[in-house]
Image 1 (spheres, rainbow, N blue to C red):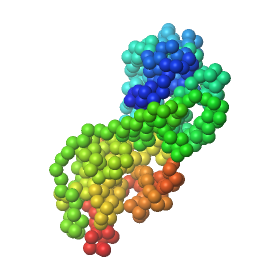
Image 2 (spheres, rainbow, N blue to C red):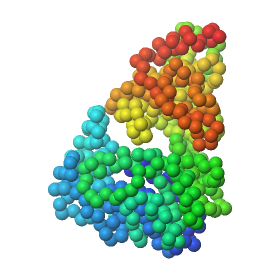
Image 3 (cartoon, one colour):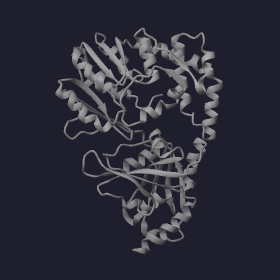
Image 4 (tube, one colour):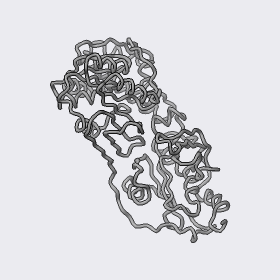
Length: 443
């Protein structure tokens, strides 16, 4: 449901490396769906839990858990729901907020896919509310919250110091992502929104230092790698951004999950066998086959990432590489709704500038079309992220335009965003373009 929900395995890691059984009070910052609260209650029931968040759903749940339900009114595009809910109890109204949040995923209605799904939720609103009520009830039964603070998480963290409480924080990974996520709800619900400062993740290390100087006991969960503070926990499972945990403890836990790999027979490409008349073949592939290719050709330090659509690239029946597409909220937020993310464009060899050919293919509508059919929308541009020790990536030169660049967290390279329009040239036409410039006989 929510972006940024802590993975279950990561929660288990947290409770392995930190002994909460000796704590009296714990301040949880950015509670979200209260998964940490429920886990903590099961592990250390003696702990008094003090939760915090600013979203409508979290505040509604926090109010119910502490016996002080908050008031809110559906307005705007959701105004008609008030009449449907006029006799509803607080738990049912909380379920209605959850359903409205699901509707928000399709609220822009700028393509047939979104229109169809939004209208379906709209027509069947009470049906989904009734289905959601048991989930809300079970969540409330599993979480015992002693207090709930609707406001800035940093204020909640510093108040823990006065109480001599442990701080367990999971602040947002992206600036503005939280606000974009709840934009539709906040525009169509009237309620007493809490005041808080717009969080910028680049401030996290310094804010954590302030907690350290104040003598706080904390467990900070983030996607950031800090070179001046060793992480006691790392969790990666096919995510673009792994989770790190920073705390004062001698214990540690590191998990790197990989998906199932399905081995298959193939002929690796031999650049010397390519000709101007070679035939390009594009094959759809499942995640297991892609995992096999990535296990063989990706560096062991690179986390596997699953996409929505996967292709294997062959020339004259020889495997050249693969392309993986995805569409995520961060991509839409940064580049617009008609942008598809090239999650990976892998060439299995470095010779012959074949990596540039795979990058060219990744821009082709012949491949992007599979994403368009899957989500019933049209894409105008592609974007991708390159990790390089150099200020630019030669692979994308002449193929995509550099959109942004920053130093990586370790300070030994760059994170570079590239993008460009979707090309209507076919894979065979792109091969001819590549052959004329970079074919083996071109030196």
